[in-house]
Image 1 (cartoon, rainbow, N blue to C red):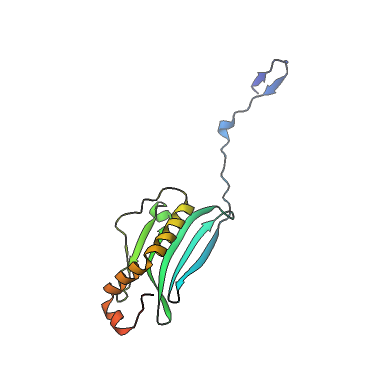
Image 2: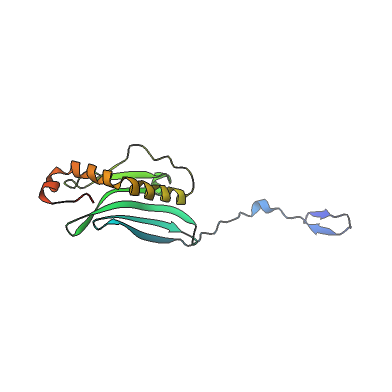
Length: 153
């Protein structure tokens, strides 16, 4: 039996119960973008993010500082903001060039806002502090530093 609702004009219209219909969110296809920023000949920032529209960033995959040693690029540190971290920005740094592996930063970086804001913050932090990050890695990498002549700039 249809429930009806009468208007003042006397015509009845069916009244629908929309609670039984669930609205489904459409998953829009995301695209991963990777970009490189050159800091010098032997130092670079590489960042990757996912977006669903031209300007709508939905996830910061990685923002990393890489240095060139010989012919290979090595990651000094990187930021990520992925599902496994509850979409909170984290910094990971390389232990040393002698020992493979990384250490996640003890505290999460408390940047509130959209992923675009987190991406911008991470890029600015690396641009501002990349020489210090590289110095600290080279100090921890005494064996490799003696073998190779690595420039700071």
